[in-house]
Image 1 (cartoon, rainbow, N blue to C red):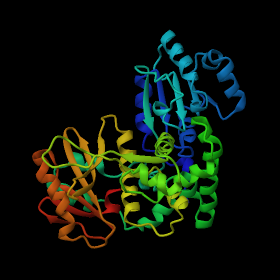
Image 2 (cartoon, rainbow, N blue to C red; image 1 turned 180 degrees about the vertical axis):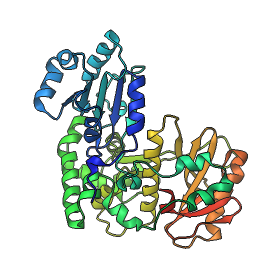
Image 3 (cartoon, one colour; image 1 turned 90 degrees about the horizontal axis):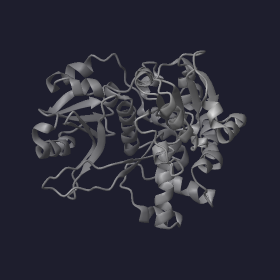
Length: 408
């Protein structure tokens, strides 16, 4: 297996661009996604590196933040969510001396969603998310799927674009089970070894990382909620059902799901909606930031269709959050049951994507993509139907069926 410390990451190129533009860059993402490795590789020897996992550094952040932040050299501070008040000192330091790239901060939580964080560094910092490794990052390509190329290529040339990719079929279930965290994805080849790693990851999250975000009275209850959410991948968020399953009040379920989302473990995919004649479902759908962790928590050894959707969404999120130009990702579902798994909105155009865990795409699989296009007219691009077989063809004049591995 490849050494993950030498593999290029998708966000590496834009990381440098953002440091050149802003006094501070905040890189967030789940623990063990590779943030520390990424930032330590950036200009080694020219930036001071300190981590708040070091208790002495954490103590200095509380006692004398100005001394910790001082000096003329650029500073990298790892795991800043452990001392959220430090951001006030960062703001003061930037206001006193505004220098591009002065501070590079990382955190294993979405600082903008943390209740303890009252300072967003607005106008002083750029934010970047490092997700677990995409399939193409694991293969050494340092990128996500071909979303940029699809958006920038006329539909008439999509088939040639995808057919020209030097790629071979892969078992998506194996990719799902190993997830995207570098250690289990690249270094651990036995499922038993990965299970040990995932169990340790969850235990560390519950016993330590979670305590940085909130005080939880019952960790066993929290773990049961995590498992219940893992069993609902791809489903609409329903706090009442989750509460009944784990015997918790809806308010507690809502708060704990927020904590999981703040930690990048849970993803709530919003509905895509504009004012149209059809009644649309607007409740978010549940997915996970890393499928390997989710399958381990759920005790699932054979991934199913919703897990393939989650793989595609993870790739989309990694691509979206590494872009300088913002793109929006949602799902589309009507009250009558028509549904498209993902809608990518970029430059006022829409790309609908449907995912089918089937080797032989059928004409009927294109129906909801075509219904979406009929609703949104010229704003909608041709539909993309991803499947597990080898067929690459136009199912209809406006829906291209493609193997998932040719795209992500």
